[in-house]
Length: 118
Image 1: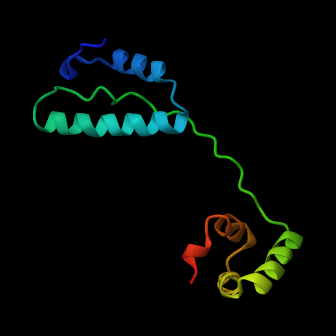
Image 2: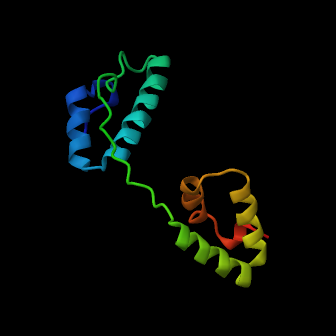
């Protein structure tokens, strides 16, 4: 399998290679999409006859549940920010008063660092 030409690659060879890599489902799907786009280009330039990824189906990806803040935790964060980082506190309050739910806010607050707020 090391010296297979890309035009001679079969679906079974691709599946064996993907299984050998032991990729997590998310990366497996991205890998298949990437190889598929390469094959589309190769077909366009008539280097290959068909796209071997056509019937390679994506694996189901299970998303981890989001972390949701409780009201008491949000209040603790508010007090801390108001005392120590007033600019960031103001940003948080604008974000909250804009109508964003606590569910969305709790996901966003952990993605933002002080370099995002000046």
